[in-house]
Image (tube, rainbow, N blue to C red; front, side, top):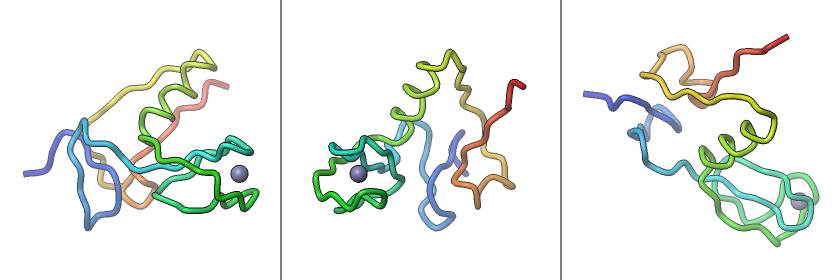
Length: 88
Ligand SMILES: [Zn+2]
């Protein structure tokens, strides 16, 4: 039985509350999905692991946007289980 929220690839389902690997660059501050050793934007190796979901929620909060967690939506699997509703 799938959890209330699944993230990651279809082969590695995760339940709500499990961290989703992300990587933040110390030099350019870019955020990437996955566990990387090198920044995809500037090429720096000064990167560190983060919880991607936490980072996304913090970015949303900075723009006064809201984050909701919902039950899995089959069509979102290929999009990384993340969607946005545009305000404008
Ligand atoms: Zn970078």
